[in-house]
Length: 380
Ligand code: PLP
Image 1: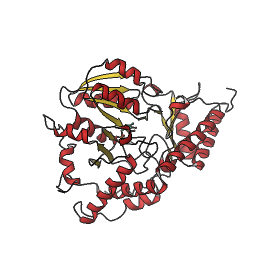
Image 2: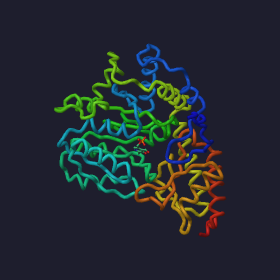
Image 3: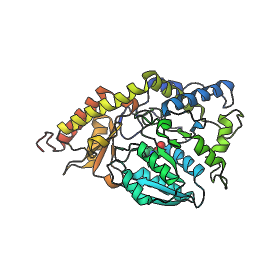
Image 4: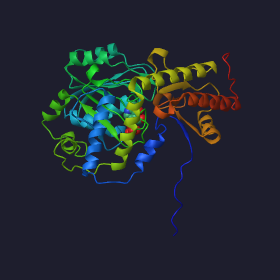
C-alpha cells in the first residue's frame, strides 16, 4: 500500500485556550538536528533552560525543571511527589482544573477536602478558610489562572492561609506563566507547575515545575516511594543535577523549542510582556462589549490571556465556532464544564496576543454573528 502524503497543517489563527501561536524562531529551533541527551552541548542547553525558567517563574529554587509531558503531568508530578496516602489535601475548585487537581490528589491517596467556589470568579480565600475550619492540611491547592472560566486568583492571601493550616501551597500556573506575573518566591508558593503551549508560545509537550526548599524537604521526608516512577522528582533531579544520571530520554527538540521560547520572553522583558497581555485583553473586552456581548467574569477578576464571552441567546455555539474556523481560519474555544454551550473562550496568549490579532478576531466574530442573525450593537 502506498504511503499517505506528508501531513500539511492548515494555516490557523489560534485564539482558543491553548495552544497559542508559535514564533517562527521557535519552530526553526524545533527543527534543528537532534543530538544525544547526554551530549555536553545538550546538557548546557538544559542548564540554560532551567536558568531562564527560574527567571520567568520568579524563583531561585534549585528544583526547577521541565517535565517531559503536558501541563497535566506537571500537576501529577506536584501532587504525586507531595501527597502520601492519608495526607490531608485542601483544593479550591472554581473550574475544571481545580476538579482535576482534586481527582489527582485522591488517586495519590490523599484525603481530599474540596471548596466549591463560584465558576467565573476568583477563588474566595475567606470561603476556603471557612471550609478548612482551622484543621491542619499537608497541601493547599489553588489554580492561579482558571482556563475553563477566565478568572485570575491573587495568590498572597492563600499563602497566609496555608501558613495558618500548616500547609504547603501548590499553584497551577499553566495559563499564567509568561502572561501574568507568577513571582513564586515573592508569593511564597511551595510548588508550581505550568505548560508550554499557553503564554510561553511553545508547542505543548513540556511542563515546567518548581519546588521550594520546603517542598523539597517534604519530598525527602516521605515515608513511601513516589507512586509514579516516571514523575519521581528525586530520580529526575539526578539527571538535571550534577550526576547527570540517565532517567528517561529527554525530548531533545522540544527543549530546543522551549529554550528559544524562553529566550524570546526574556528578550521582550517580563514587565513589557505582562503589560502587552493586559493592554490587548482590555482592548478585546472593549470591542466585545461594544458589540453588545457580555463578558462572564467581573473586570477586576479577569485573566488577561483568556476572555470568557457569554453566547447570546438564540446563537448556536458550534455553528459560530465552525464558521470562524471555516471562513476566517480562526480558532476560539468552546465553554468547559459549567460553561459548556454557554460561553466562548477567546485566548490572547503569547505570540497570539497582538493588536492586529485583537482587531482580526473582533471583526471576524462580528461578521459571523451578524450572518447568524445577531444584531451586533450595544442596544441588545
Ligand atoms: N491546568 C490548567 C489551568 C490548564 O489550562 C490546563 C490545560 O489547558 C491544564 C492544567 C492541563 O494541561 P495540559 O492540557 O497541557 O495537560
